[in-house]
Image 1 (cartoon, rainbow, N blue to C red):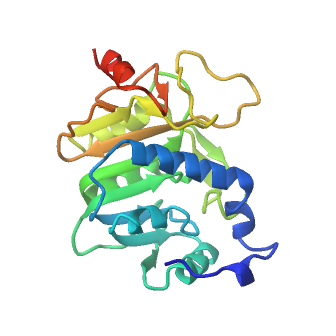
Image 2: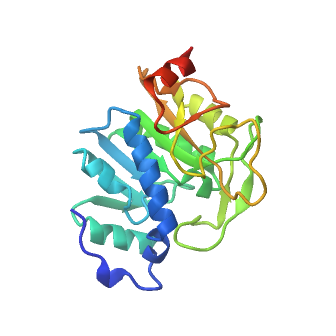
Length: 251
């Protein structure tokens, strides 16, 4: 159970960023969508990378998962440990990962981290090495069909890149990197009900739309799931799709 953080919520705290209205709504929409995919998560061992202050951790604890959470920033780690004092929490920079685990995890969870890294290929290889089941990955991406990483500078705040440099890879780059490490790579036919998640990838968003996000499910085993397809989708549906629409997407 998470502890009371009222004493930690100061203007200098990372919570000022992580618990803004935007972030909380964004988290809610992503986790609602993840739950809707009906993946075999309950009771799994989970490596949560880029855990931040632990706003996604409870999703797995509520499903009786055994969670190890890793995070690069010491100020975020302090809050994470305060919220979940019985959790296995460790410091890890995924740009240059050094921790060796005794055994791989059923699930590696990487939502909202990959695009904050300057070495995303290193991160994907490390996560695959420590995964014996599924890698759940959500990241900001760039429009386009080529394989491009698109390195970029990031602002200095607790929610952004630890190194100061991130990336905005194309979906093709992410998908193909995952295919080098996993036998099966899927995309959901639905996207979260949030403006950061496009459903038509044929046209880039207008200027002023800062972020475009995509979700990937990589797996060591074949997943029989009508909400997942083994290809890069150019058209997706908003979360809430009907069974009839699911069938039409699969044809």
